[in-house]
Amino acid sequence: MAAAIDPKIAEREIVVSRAIDGPRRLVFQAFTEARHLAQWFGPNGFTLTTNAFAFRPGGEWVFTMHGPDGTDFPSWVQWQEIVPPERLMYRQGAKPGDPDAFHTTITLVEEGGQTRITLRGLFNTKAQRDEVVEKFGALEGGRQTLDRLAAYAPTLAAGGN
Image 1: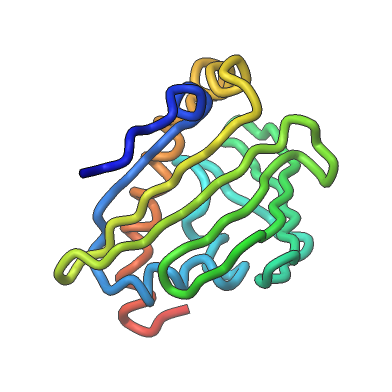
Image 2: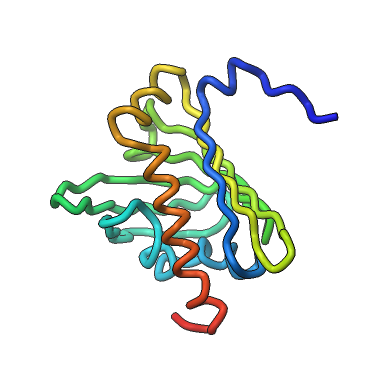
């Protein structure tokens, strides 16, 4: 029997999931280097510039998301847990010490020749969660990001850069 989801957590969380063609070791690889992330991370029309990248627990990824309208969004990730090729956990905000930073857990599960990737973003409050969904379109942005990852995965499978 599945464990019940705590409603106090569920109301502060967004969850986006998608099956991606390819083994999870390749899907996981897409997170391991800034050059890979630059190819797919973010919603449609967004690009990013990485300023620092240390893929290890406690390491940071500092980058700027560039919106299609020219707006820049400073971003910071601190990797908290890296379990190849099944799970990543990190804290994300605009910068270190951001009081609005939130936690993300990414799980990758093999499903035949595909990988089921699930993103779970846990926010500090329900109001914060609601704001990122309503004001910034976080659910649709998450779906678009995973679609971009799915489009990029064959490049990794072909051994491309």
